[in-house]
Amino acid sequence: MIAVLSNIGTDSLKIRLTKTKKELYIPDGYNVWLSEISDLSSEFYNLPISDCFVLLHGSAFDKELYEISAKYLETAISRRSDCRFYISDIDIPFEYSGNDKNTLLPVAQEYEWYLFISKICKEFQNARIFQLKELITAAGRDKCISAKLNYISGNPFTPMFEKIIISEIEREISMIARKKCLVLDMDNTLWGGVIGEVGYNGILLAETGIGAAYYDFQKKIKLLKETGTVLAICSKNNEEDALLAFDNRSMFLKRDDFVIIKANWKSKSENIKQIAEELNIGLDSIVFVDDNRIEREEVKINIPAICVADFPNDISGLPKFADELYRNYFYVAELTAEDKNKTRLYAENIKRDITRSEFNRLDDFVESLKIELIIRKACQNDVNRIYQLVTKTNQFNSTVQRYSEDEIEGFLNEPAFQTYVGRASDKFGGYGDIIIALVRTDGGNAKIETFLMSCRAMGRSIESAFLSEIVRQLNIQGYQNITFAYIPTKKNAVCREFLRKYGAESLGSDEFGELYSVKALFEKKYVEVKFE
Image (cartoon, rainbow, N blue to C red; front, side, top):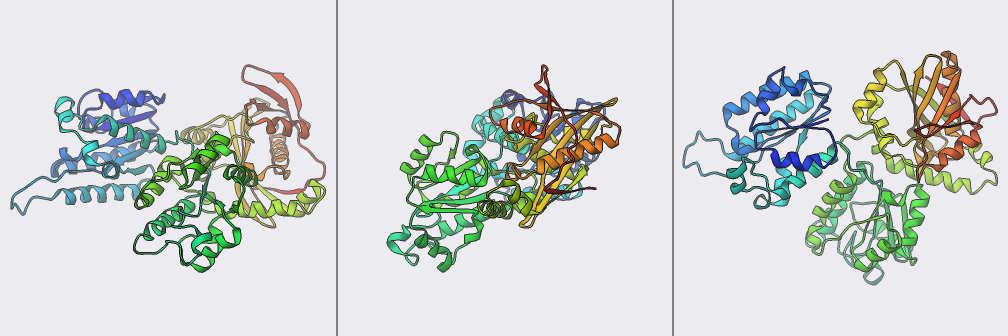
């Protein structure tokens, strides 16, 4: 359940948020947010709220209200440790104050409040900053704030700005699926000019002047990479000419920041399809950026599933465009170790695929990898990574059930559930935590209700080794009747094929999907398994 607490009228925001189809709590009445968090008998303390957005309009703030708000907010965050709080910073329009030296200027008031919420976010894991002022600044105060609406309804936010707020809320609670890969053109996208015509010395790229727009764009794209976005290049160019820029010009992005570089004269759509195949990701997980409208249209026509971003007409808007790419497609509320190492993980995976071509038999290739799989029961530290896998994995996902972070935490604390996580590595490097299973137990029965694995680890016997070890662990605990749930979707047919190869026995279907009986396998394994 989402809660919104505010010091402005919330009727119109409530109507718009209802369309998100999430359970919603917004208290009736005007400016009742402080009474909600200060009264332990209020609905706020009695409802199963997972995410609370505290949206504050700065004009209503004064010194006394600031101190009271800070006190009660800190107490509420401490009391409701089961709820994530998103506390907005404040935007205060400049007001003339004469020569009164005791009057605190708006920017100082904003800064004082920001210091407080920054302190709270450091002290409490369940507190985050909701950057309301940045949203207003980006869109323009005149477009976001209306004095007329404030007089009429007690709500100064325009309909347009409320839509922006709702989009931010959806991102924060991951109602918008994050994309995996950003595919970029080179000429007039990463730099100005066509390198095949002007040479690497002639392209526009510098820390000052008009070329700085491209340089600053590259800076932003580098930050995207560091949040776990995989970068690739798709350019109509001679590869040798194109790569000279990385080798001979000072630029923020380096050659090894890109997992794949396709610089040739094939169609952009053909190259992008190959990129998706080599990364083993869906085309709907890719965002394509190209300055050329004709190239963008060609990709849209031939790859309907892909996201094609509208390139800015004015290159001075490139840095802002990069920010929009992050907000619209690649936003992540909390980074994991896998996010930070995503480029390395995919690059190592491509090396594995290249090695695969050297073997005639798949079994020989898998055996040569010397894979090690470490399995453990999940703990609190695993919640965020499990949540990522649950929300992003579509192909090798037995039931494609989506769970919130709160639900995952609930599974860890519920005796009837067991959650397992697998971390794999081989001679090329580590895969990270890439496979999970959620098991429901009842009497002497155990049912694997969710079984999923990152697509970049498919086809290497990891899934078989993982399932076999889980079944063995359940047998040790006394569970002999172990079943595996499978709900077919358009994308997860690979799971049914896995069950067939594994030797699972079909038990028919129920109202939820297909059910299989599974047993531990004891034949030769190509994966060394350790259970912690």
